[in-house]
Structures are given as C-alpha cells and as structure tokens.
Image (tube, rainbow, N blue to C red):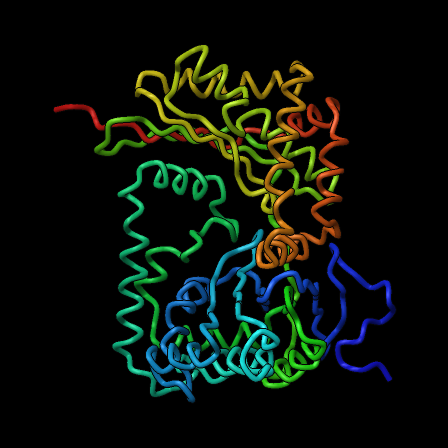
Length: 435
C-alpha cells in the first residue's frame, strides 16, 4: 500500500516539484536546503458566483483568531512562539474562479534550539485558523464583521482616488458585463454593502467543503512534511470538489465605445482586446513576447512610436490577464489626443501582427520576458508562487523550460499571437469640461 505522500512512481513531478497525492489532494514539494526557511501554501478554488464578495472579505476576518487563539493578539503570540512564523490568508481570482490561499513561512526546526518539529507546529496552526476560525462560530461579534465590511466598502469606493485604476475597472466591467469576470475582484460595492454577517461563514465552509485544493511546499522541508500535511487535510471537512469552469470567451462582435468624464487633469484611455486563452507553454510564450513588443516597456512600440516619436501620450503600456483572455492597453494623454492614441496604438498592433519589426526588437522583447524568470530559484517562496500559477494554468514547465520556450519564439509566432487579438471596448475617462 502506498504511504501518504508517497509518489505514485518516482518520476511523478510537475514544474520541477515532486508530485504526490496526500489524502487525495495533490501536493507539490521541492526540497531546497540551501536556506533555513520553508513555505507551505494551500489553495482552494471555486467558480466565481454570488459568494465572491464574501470570499474576498475572508482574509480580513480570518486574522481575528480561532477557538484556541480567540483574538489577534493571541494569534500573534502563537506565531511568535513559532519563532516569528507567518500564517495568513489571501484572496484572488484566476480566470473565472475564486482562489483562497493559506500560506505559512517559518524557520526550519533544524536551525532552532532543540530542533523542534516546526513544520508540524506550523501545519497545526494552519489547521487551527482554517477549521476553527472565529468566522465559523455563530457567536462571533457582529461588530467585527461590520468593521471589516465597512473597511472593504471604503477600499472599493476609493477607486475614484486613482483615475487610471478607475478607467481600467470601468473598461473591464463594460467588456465583461454578463460574464463571471464582470465583477470586481473585491466583489463589487453593491455586494459588499448588502452582505450579511452569516455570508463569510457560509463562504468559508463552502470553500473548505467544495473548493478544489492543491498544496505546495518548498524550502528546508523535513522528511515528514507530507505526513504532516496528511494530518492537516484530515482536520478539514469532508470534501466534495466542484467542477471548475473554463473562462467565457465571447465571439467577435462590434467594438463598443464609451466616453465618461470626471474631475481630473489628464485623460485615461483603455483599450480592451480579447485573445484566446493560451493552452500550451508555446502559446503563452508567443503571447507574452507579442505583448512585450507591443507595449511592455521602453523598448516597445507603444513607448517608442506612440509616446516618444508622436508625442501623443504621457505613458502607454499593454498588459492584461492571459488566464481570462484579456489584453489591456492603458494610456494617459491630453483630452484632445484620445482618438489619436487609440488609433496609433492599434496601428502599432497591426505592425506587429504583420511581422514588421526588427530582429533587435524581437530579441529585446524576449529578454525582457525572460529576465524575471532567471531569479525565481533564488527564493523558495517565489518559486513556489510561480509553480502555483503554472498548476492553475495546467502548464507543466519549470522556469528554465519557460526561458527556453521564450528563446524559441520567432517572428511568425509573434505575428500570429498579435493577429489573434480583437478590439472589444474602446474606453476613455476624460476631464470634465470647464464651466
């Protein structure tokens, strides 16, 4: 019989991490004893839905203690007893799924007085804050919920304090209206305002019972790490995994244009383009290089042609969310240049799609994409985070393999990636007219 944490066969791996199943949960591990610390992360994913806003509030509420550590000071003291370990939650979305992360960082017991089983203690604290959180208690003070909800609502409303962020959000919400992605990451002001005290409790139970989990551990890990994770998963509620949706990708349609105004000095232009969600590493590399060449920095066409040569804008960049199939161009310009900025931005995309760029531009764009990958192995935490993203994408590649894949991207692949984009929304937030 296979022991908990034992790989199905010695070759089981994913993106350079050993892959095992622990309590029927995939566990990715990478032992690296060049340092003294380890990181452990557990992810749960659920389809975005009506509980999204309540899920987004969970990291704030979950820091307020558990049955054993009933408030923030008590929880902080326990972390100090674990030699300054950090244990906490974060929330994000991937494609059109909600992602709840529980992460811990700590010094390995091998480097501590008496060589305690630090991993077991940290895993125990992770189980405590997730399965015995005050959020799950029916008698948790309503005032605690109201305070965190009010803070979340204030944060959501603060978008108007950053006009570029406001323009981006407005453009994406227009483009994705009617899609699960057409809700802000925080869930939206209306949902936060209408949220009831029991909803975060329901959201946490739903995530633990129905979320699709994966665990990743890296760094100076003890030999017993997988067995301790088995104990962690045994403490969780019985799980019934949900089916995760693929992102909605609408058929090509006429461009939608919208102009809004606000009290501001500089116009903000946002072009929302659609792209196929990359299904392979080669497709992802080609898209990233195309975006780098089009608008990924001072070397890009948006910078050199639209900003520098034509002096149409103060800044211009291309980015977005490849896991949803969205590409965004964001620019800041004078109100009178809004139309020209959009036209010239798309003209430069057409040039890239036609393959009209130099070998130097291509090589520079590839190098820019490769740069951040080269230092990932300097930090177990950074490597773990990157590998988690690859798991969510289903792309089994190490950083070195991705670097090699980027080096293979040629002119035709870049042109094909650029040609696959189509403009969905042309949005601008402009200064209000003077009275």
